[in-house]
Image 1 (spheres, rainbow, N blue to C red):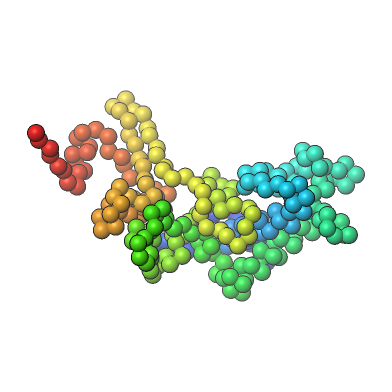
Image 2: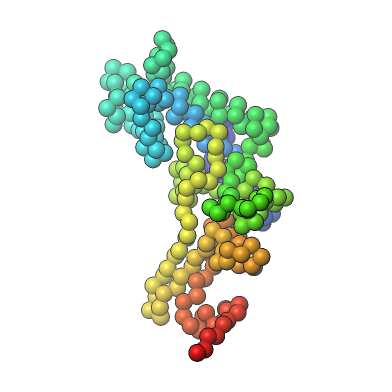
Length: 261
């Protein structure tokens, strides 16, 4: 069942849940379940395969280095200094603390089973409910602590009925839409690192045309209509026009202020 889900995966990483635009397609749900299985397995594979060696060396590499290591170990083990010609594989798959000699296939199978058990315990026994958007969410919190209760500038707002755990997001550690949750904590899949602004500029003979969205809005004041309006674009990977010329700005202005001596 796990292998079948991964075999059918298109390698897209959608949240697979309603983000406010209606129910996702069956393909998006299927892809999101495969994304959950893959991402629940990967940090467990890293721990099973490399924690013993890293612990012995006292090293804690980051996601980029761990990702490259596991990529080479699976696909091109001969590129690693730990490659054994007699075994035809890297020796890193073997656990130094056990008398048995663990192999790549055994470690991968074990990590997938551990990942499936985690998803079962967290999201239920029905695999159809293992959508990525239930795990991979984003909450924007103010760096300025609230004087009482929860911060009113947090997005989504505290107590949001639709997104109580944060905005469901696509992307993962390995896709173009980077949304790094790391490879060292197998219990955490929240959006930790990724693109902030998505500024696109086209240089045309008549001048630049730009599109941009902020993760939030232009106004810090929660009561302002512009506190979170751009977040609705940003979390959908969309961007509204960024008006550049005086005529464009005046045509789309919401208000204006004049200052005279």
